[in-house]
Structure formats: C-alpha cells, structure tokens
Length: 285
Image (cartoon, rainbow, N blue to C red):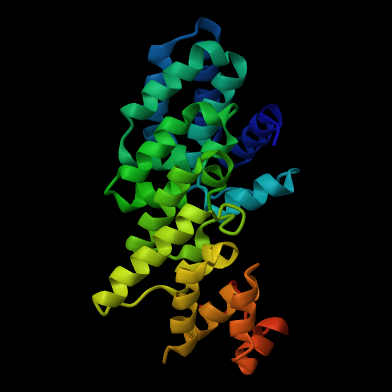
C-alpha cells in the first residue's frame, strides 16, 4: 500500500469518526510538529491522544482501499489506534530522515497500549523495515498482548523477519498455546530449520506425555526427511483424529515420495484430504 494513500485514507476515516474538536486538535498539532520538526510536540501529542480521543467513538469504516479496510477490520482497530498511526504515518511521510529515529525512540519508551498499537499497524508505516528492531524485541516479551500484536494476523513478520526470527516467533506462539491459524503465511515461510525444531519439540512433548497442537506440524510438509517420516507414522497411528488429520495433511502436501506412499496406507484419510473435506483451515478447529 502506498503510504501517501494510507495517510489520506486514515485522515478521512478520522474526520468522519472523531468529534470536531478532537480532529482539529490533532491536525493543528500535526502542523506544529511538521512545521517546526518538533520532537517534543511529537512525543507529547502521541501521549496526549489517549486523553483527547474518545476510544469508544465508533469507526465509520468506508474506505476506498479495500485491502486497508480489511486489515483494519481484522485488527479490530479503534479511533485511538488510528489516531496514533495517522500521526506517525504523517510525520514519516513528511520528513523521514528527521522523524524515523524520533519514532524509534518514541516506541522505546511507549507504554504497553502504545506499543501494541505500533506493532499491530507497523506494516502501514512508510519504510516499515526500518523499525524491525522493535518488532524483533517484541518476540522476547512476556507480555501476551505485545507478543500477540506482532505475531497474530500480522503480515509484518512474514514480510520482514529472517528465518531465525520467524522460527522464534512460531515456536513461542506454540509454546504460549496461541491459535497458530492466526499466523499469516505459514506455508511460504516454512523452512528446513523450523521443521527440525518442530520435530525436536514434539519429541520433548511426547516424552513428557503432553499434547501437541496439530496445527504445529503444518510447516514440515516440504521438509520431511527420514526422521520426520517416523513422526508422520506416529501421527497417522495416533488415537487422536486431529493428529491423524495433521499427519495426513503433511504427507499429502509433501514432496517426499515416501510420505505420499505412507498416506496411501490410510485410504479414508487420503481421500478426505484429496477431496478437500479436510484442510489446514478447517480440520483442526
């Protein structure tokens, strides 16, 4: 999405959703911040938005950009979050060289709510990759809302994280027992190291007689080797129907011929996957 277009869409959205005084206050502050390159006013305005904007105001979502509208709906955006992101997008569009380090510092001292907003909508900022440090830092947090903001229904990790960062996020989401179906682009970001980590983690869980989220296995399909093939046998022989389906989906979508051949020993499962009766999207719910 073009950042100038995003700025215009967010401004229109706020004009139709905020009360007139709040909208005028925000636009006047923006003029001061941009006109004088004021770091102090940027920080004060970002902080004061929570007292100036009525978070309970309903958003009138009627944007020209359907993808932006879908994203805001998916993230359950409210007027305070949109106000904060509009402020950041505007200053970064106007003078990125000056404001990028200021925004990075702002997020370093942000409270939890401000940080969650930043992470949820980071993908909308111009040159979003410049703020990857903050996104990676969020992977180390023990605050669930902060980790969920960067990992759940967020395209930023798939777009900008390297494999190590992506794998760390995926494994931590599983460890925190979050809904893995809310991680975007799992198939495209699957990699050999992650497949090995998944297998190792599964063995630890099995040794401790602990359950494993069947969705956890999704990234292994393209990386089934001799060791992981043994894991597939275990899933297909499990007394859990969800694990049976998980093993069947991995084997069906595998490039490994032995995995495909293994699935043929379970014709009912094979046909369920082949006919689209079970998929990663519907089978594990």
